[in-house]
Length: 216
Image (cartoon, rainbow, N blue to C red; front, side, top):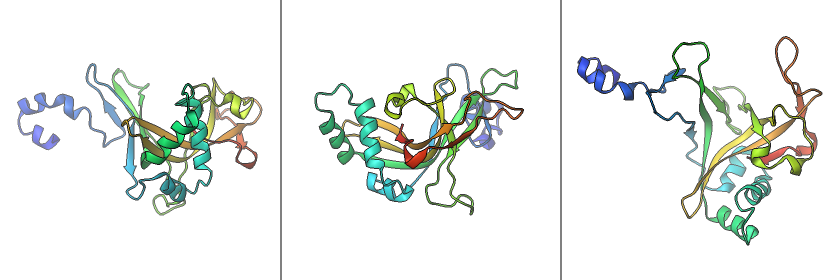
């Protein structure tokens, strides 16, 4: 499309808003009032049910963790939460993805509408670029997912705890409502959760016996 637009100045002018949304590089620029959003990428064609997520990403306790999440976050005010949770899980269409693309505002530029594209990746048991499987670590906001009380007191940085992502997937119910979910293993912050030392790192370790495994 860009090559086509370069043929004539008037074509390029008409397509300027479209061209600015290209996402095949490390940055994007948005036009005025255009929405910038995260994108799920690299859908797994062999995943259509929760059973497939369990197998593909090797998460034997996924059903249990999903029930807890749906009960606490989706059906907390339902008259029959257990029944609603089971109905959603049994009747849902499921899709799984290898990554999430996240636009982050560019700080080192005078352009106000520039974004750097970050990618959070999880390949399950599949190799990443002919190497070991890839599982990124990201921040999980405790209060938003109502897990602070469930897991007990946890050291956090502004309410956030680092967690390794084990699977990225969606759940679509019979009412077509779409839930974008991830299974993560929350890590235990060692000592002070504030970034420290010259490298500005937070030090973490694995929680015992998978006690930090949750759906968010």
